[in-house]
Length: 190
Image 1 (cartoon, rainbow, N blue to C red):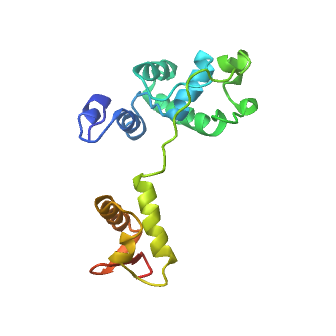
Image 2 (tube, rainbow, N blue to C red):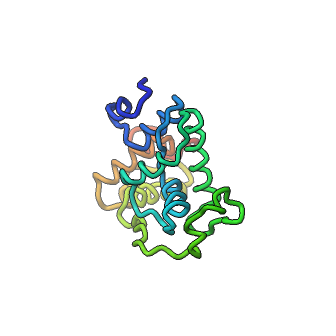
Image 3 (cartoon, helix red, strand yellow):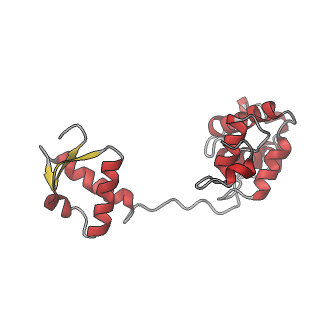
């Protein structure tokens, strides 16, 4: 298993966040681990902005790296601390500034905690998503007194291809089971 960010990034399916997190937490490397919570904490504490924007940028990685201690093992602990502060203290809607360890130096707090001027993150829609199709299938299985024939599930969503994909994903995820050919139930109800 590679221990540095460039080699981790070369692995299939490994993105920036995962490569940095593995390097920092598994191998105690000095790698900035930047998630939404860290970006918000750094945007507030350092830049005085209420929000960091919708996506991690190279500038976010540089800003966090500048805050990391030089010793790799201590830097990894600092990355974990930034994540915890952002998730539990410097929260999006109700920041707990009174208990924040950075409150004395927080640029956002010093400027009066102004609201964000950046466009908000657009929430993912629900209508027509795989989540909705899976939910419709699960509702049929939940409301049934016993196993359900495929023909009953067919009534839950009009697009056969997407319905089949959703049903397969429920089986793979261990939420549903095919008890016999063409007959399905919730896992544990079969």
